[in-house]
Image (cartoon, rainbow, N blue to C red; front, side, top):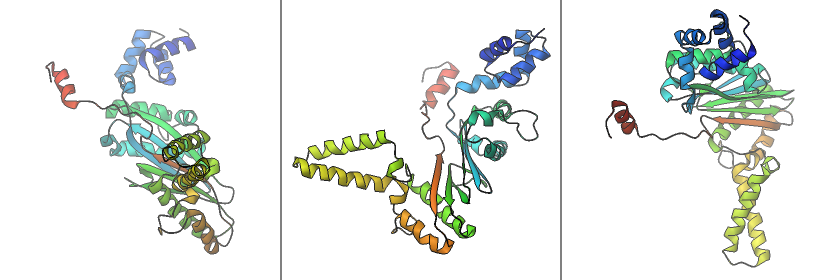
Length: 309
């Protein structure tokens, strides 16, 4: 029987299993839909698909570097217990290395061959879901590179090399000494982990965010009853203070607690022996932006047992 794209899609829609696994299941069962579902179930794949609606907000952030290029990925699981699982850690580490060639495209990364497995990254995660018993999700990835300079990485509270809860990449362009440049990059990455800046400078801030902040400040100033000209100066002053809090170059460098980051970079040029330009930074914090569902565990257990909590 011909295995059509429509048939593969039908099986995928009914099981939630990846397209390649669905195609293989149909080929193995001569296009018999029910038999294909059973084929997937016997291999734990359909079981894994049933877990796909469960919120996965734990897991790990992984980083990998190669020369003047680095990548960061976030792979989620349902519980922190799985994040401590060696199999899961090895999977995320391998995915981070593959991400160096994914150019920030999470779909492309999911389709890339997983090392030594004979199937894709997504298929490897699907198998891990069936074995470990939790939903997992390849959520996002980014790559950063420079023509001449360094891309330094840092993982906060690492569970092992390159894996943890917060991952940072910092790109510094310079023709100067790379060892000194890397030392600066590591310090900047640690600073970014601690302060969570929104942008390099005010020109890179989301203008909707700036407009909203200005509106809030304006309402606060209006309540003071100050004359319009004074009120406007107060707004601009508080907005400058806001920039100092959320833009990297204007922040106080946590390494010494005194110098502005922009000045610290300028000062480092003496050791590096050439001008330095901070071109990009990336900060991935595990689970940020994922809405976590709070559940009453006692009620859950009671419901499962068929009694009232």
